[in-house]
Figure 1: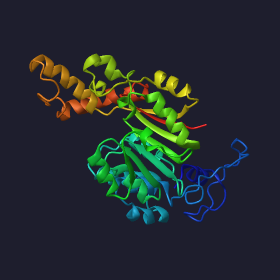
Figure 2: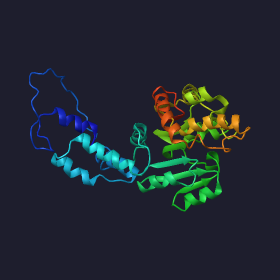
Figure 3: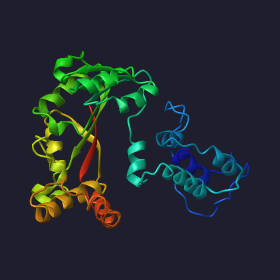
Figure 4: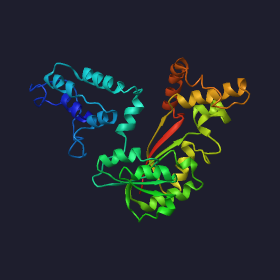
Length: 319
């Protein structure tokens, strides 16, 4: 159920579809005149029965046992949500606000739409999108990973984006998850993406944030620096500058650190000091410490809210 519908249920004077009763009148209270009401109607504007069910499908859960008690009024909305979150936690993953945001801000469904995943690996993410109805394409340098992706029914080109030579304005969405920093020619790659993307198409980019708290604290021992595999690092300012040089501007940008990179960076320092330059693999006692993970979580969370998170996620719209 969308937020807008819930809002209307709390403000309108028409019979409530859940209780079939009129809500208490707010006569005498000053209220703004509504000139436009917008309904985000799942199944009408969006090709999904329920955006909430979409989240459940992501976690592999279902809330069917809670729906009827909620519709009968046996439980309130907060209890309904509490039960849902408890179901999501059963998969052993940490469920955070940013986790749900990433799901809800994920690629919008376009029936018959074509999506390209650059650096698609074995096609795990494309396989999920294929099941939703997308026409899925991938580009992957690794031959074995490409074969595994093809075995899932995905069209994959083995090589780089330029060798694939896709037609102009062919894709609705292009995805690059932690790929841009590996490329020797990021600007030319984005330029090629613009050529093969339809007008108003989306580019989803995930990269490391060199303006992060992690980098400020750990410097050359920042785990996400990963030299020499990473040829470039970006800050919010530099990635925006690169995009604007191609008349691209991020529609959305958000940050997520988690604790792994923070603890892995700390592990580098501990190993260098006590393991005689053993690097990250000499010992992983810091990374595996539940106590340190719990202790570092608030630090990472605050960094994300301040825009200093370790990782950046961008949604970019093609003009």
